[in-house]
Image (tube, rainbow, N blue to C red; front, side):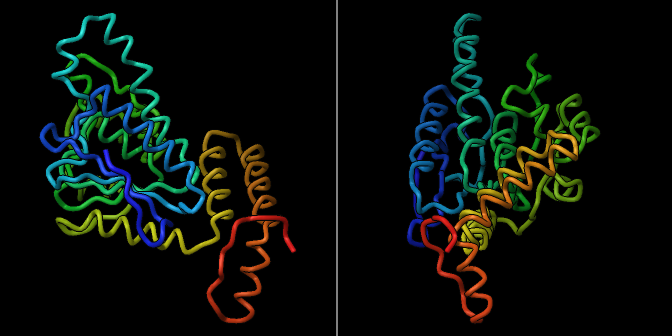
Length: 261
């Protein structure tokens, strides 16, 4: 696992770097992911993040089944909080997170992508949640995140059949947000991250909170979530700078948020 920075630190990149195992999620890798997400979250300059792979063969092939084959039932249960913490660490990042998917994104690998806000995939991507084929149930949020992203029908299709879905079908059905040519996922995700990072950091983070929290609420409650997000952005100095920049026909210069002037 590596944490890299781009564009003056505005974009962080979490690189899954266990290519010999197709980035399979072991307990050690889960711990590394938690640590890297924590480090990223403590960096105020970060406005957007990308999760990518050092290998074009796989984004992440899922849980490390070789490691699990050596575990007793008690050890498998003890591993559960470690794995849950890894996915939660990605979901807890306040800045928008973009998955750059090439090759295999299976099981926990797809769940890792689903934990991000946007998914960019290239034409080589294969996506699936095959857990029921090995006697398990998706446990990194797959049963919930997939249905919220692309609907209950697609979630049932993928989860209950354990089949793999090609990138073009995943894009057509809304599982993947942007589809690019082979080898282009990482560069496209970094470009998308820069587009996000060009906007008001306070407004972007508030909008992400509204999108996430409002998704599970009824409309009246969700509109209150949106109102809170609007007020947080409107009360920041970035709102005043954004309006000045628009009037002066220049790009805004975003500085650390404070009370509106």
